[in-house]
Image 1 (cartoon, rainbow, N blue to C red):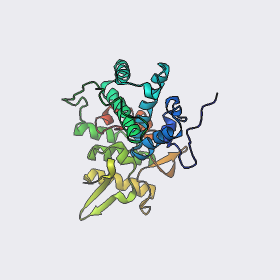
Image 2 (cartoon, rainbow, N blue to C red):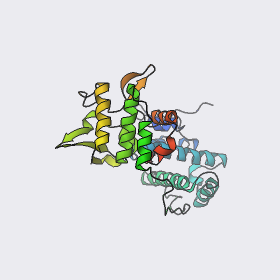
Image 3 (spheres, one colour):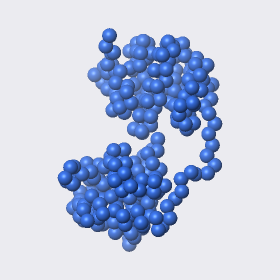
Image 4 (cartoon, helix red, strand yellow):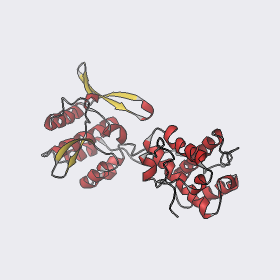
Length: 281
C-alpha cells in the first residue's frame, strides 16, 4: 500500500530539508494519529526551526528515531522514557557523543511541541539524559602565517576561478568566518569606510558582524571583483559558481557542494579545516 503524501493541505508543503532527509512522507507513527498530528509535525520543522542546517539535522534525527520505534512496534502513545533511553544507549554505540546529544535534542523539542499542541499529554523525553561530553582543549591546530601564505600562493590565479578561490580562501583565513557566512556574502557587503575596507558578515540568528580587511585580503578581493566584472552588481553574490567550461554564473557558491570539491582539487583540505568552523549546525 502506497504511503500517504506528506502534503496535508495545499498550504502545507514540506521544506526541501525534510525531503532531503528522507521525510517525503509522514512517519507511520505520526500518520496514525490523524491530520492534526501530521500538521503539528510539519509545523515543528517549518515554524520553529529557521536555520536550514539545523532543520535538516533534526529531520534526520527524528526520522531515524521513528524508524527505530516502528521496528520495535511502538506507537506514539506507547513511547516512554525507558524506550527513548534505550534508543539513546544504542545510538551511542554507533555515532559520536555530540551527535547523540543533537539527536536527543531533536527528539525532546519535537515531543515538547506535540505536547503544547495538544497531541500528547506529556513528553516522554524530558527525563532522558544524554551522554556527558566536555571539550577542554581544541583538537584542530591553527595555521601559521607561513602555512597560510603557502596555501594561498599554491592557487593558480592565471584563470578567473583561481582568483575567486584565492579571495574566498583568503577571506576565511583572515577573518575566521564560517563557510556559510562567506558564501552568502553580496558584493555590497565588501565596502570602503574611511581609509579601510570592511566586510559585513551575516551570521547565524540574523546577527551582522562587520570586520576590517587585511591589506592582502583587499588585494585578493579587488583582483577577483575587477576580473569578474561584478563591481556594479551590488546585490549579487560576491562569490559565484562556474558552469562547465569556466563560465561564470550569477548563482551563489554552494558551501556544501562546491567548496569540498575545490578543496580536494587543491589537496590542502586539512589546512583549510583549521581555519574555519566547518559547516556548523
